Image 1 (cartoon, one colour):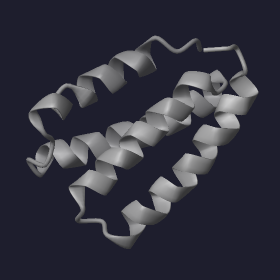
Image 2 (image 1 turned 180 degrees about the horizontal axis):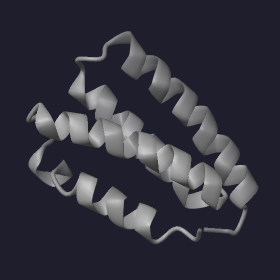
Image 3 (image 1 turned 180 degrees about the vertical axis):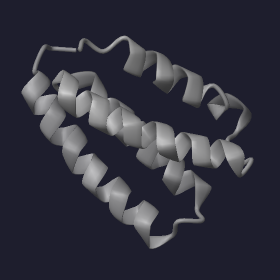
Length: 92
């Protein structure tokens, strides 16, 4: 909000590291997988386009896997479509 993209990216990357560890520790924990998706999306919002594409691709894979497994909550069911839209809006 204050325009410190580099600072935000550093904090989001740190949170992403924690989210990755938790998700890897218990791959069947849908809440931790969803937290990982959120962390990936946050990184994408302050990263350069190449990094944003990378983390959004990962977020989409996880969100789609949760969707196929029926593990997305009602509030999360739009995530795959929203992430696809974010990917489509990235500059080439």
